[in-house]
Structures are given as C-alpha cells and as structure tokens.
Length: 190
Image (tube, rainbow, N blue to C red; front, top):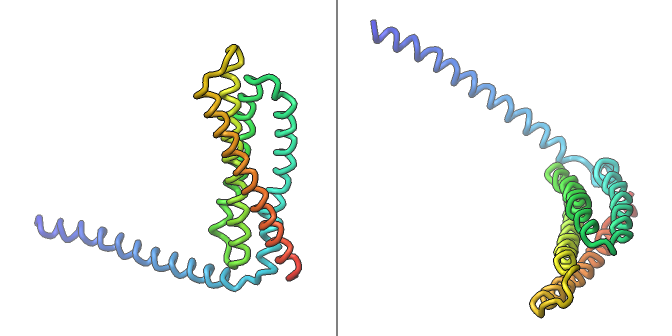
C-alpha cells in the first residue's frame, strides 16, 4: 500500500519534470529562432533603430544636462546649494543617462553599432566621473567656506582632484571626437 502511494506520488512529479523539460526546450527553440533572426539585421537598419531608440533619447538628455549644468554654474557662488544640486540632481541624472546606453548594449548585434555604444558608454562614464570629482571639490569648498585658512592637506587634495578632473576632461574630449567619427562613418554608409 505504501509502495503504491509512493508510485502515485512519483507519477505527478515525473509528469511535472517532463512538462518542465518540454517547456524549457520550447523556450530554447523560440529564443534561438529570434537570435538567428536578429543576427541577420543589417548595419543600416540596426543603426537607424539605435538612432531612434538610444542616440536620440541620449541627445535629448544632453540638452537637459546642459541646462542643469548651466544652473549649477549660476549657483556656484553658493557652495552648499551648488554641492547639493550636483549631488542630488546632476549626478543621478547622468547615472540614469549612462544606464540607458548600458541597457541597450546587450540587444545590439552588429559590431559597428556595439563599438559606437561602447564609446558612448565610455563617454558617459567619463562625464560621470568628472561630475563626481567636481562634487568632491565642491564638498571641500563647502567644508572650508567659513575657515580663514585652508590646511596644506586640504589644498593638496583640491589640487589633486582638479588635476584628475582636467585629465578626465581631456579624455571626454577625445572620446567625444571618436564617438563623432563613428557616427559619421555609420551615417556615410547609409
């Protein structure tokens, strides 16, 4: 009797595993079909989709970023407000912007588009790093606003951060030039 109960319990379990196996095979077959189909997308078509779904939204965000940065520059004389705005508004906005490019990367098929997106991610990452350096510098300014003299250590830290930020600015410029080159090359292929 106990043996027949055990056999009865094994049948539904066996059936569940069989159905699960069939489901896994069906999903794998569907995914491999989609993958094969997406592998055949032309560079021109993928670039057009990339422009519409990634590049144009990033471009729109660049205008928003420029407005935010202009606002930051207008309040720079108010260290606490400027620092807070940078930390709470500008940096999170740039993090979201970079995530858009990162999220798109796994869906890209053609090497040229993937390379452009990698350059875009690098550009946004460098910009984010620069903003973070600027936030560190503004934090020093907030900390020393009511101090008559700045310590040598604080001064050296600010100088180092500024130098690092200048290096980042050069890399941002170089990466921007490379990104423009890649876009122009892709546009000329169309």
